[in-house]
Amino acid sequence: MSDGTHGLAFQGKPADDFQDDDRRQGQRYTLLLRTAKFVADGMEHLCIIREASDSGVKIQLFNPVPEAASFALEMPNGDLHPIAFIWSKDDVAGFRFHRGIDLAQFIQASASESARKYVRLQKRMQGTLTVDGQIIPISFANISQQGACIECSASLAIDQLVAIDMGVLTPTFAKVRWRNRPQYGLIFEQIYRFEELARKLGFTARP
Image (tube, rainbow, N blue to C red; front, side, top):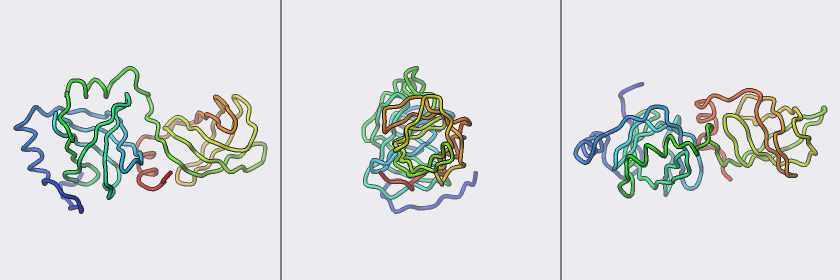
């Protein structure tokens, strides 16, 4: 990863100031590969928590930080922390918590037993479903590495195998796990890589 920084049109301290403040205000913890959701103006995106202190957090976004009026970090257990943009370096960015956090609770929330194994994004997208030779338009309500919730006009059976094409992601096969017409829960035959999902779905689709 390059050490070069690039500026963004946001107010805040540069990276070195943020890091110096963290050293003065509390111990910095390294949280490797803790998946979470980055929320910009209500739009959800996948991210990885890299480091955190009681005053700020460093996260990997896989995409440039978008211009937004508000940012938040949603933990795997559902805890939501409002954050303010400070700096960015390549695809990693630093944010300051609006209010100080209990670091022990923050770390525990990132590894909570109640957290989903695969982070689920509330993401409205369009795609197609192919079943019995018919191509049917579908709308996504949410998606994760492992599956999705869709809406469509087709009458699908539990465990029925269908082909899914979302356009931005590699097409895949999926099985129906639950149904509540017109909504269906799908489990993908092949799990998407976290980074692929984060990059391909980053800062593009709006509800």
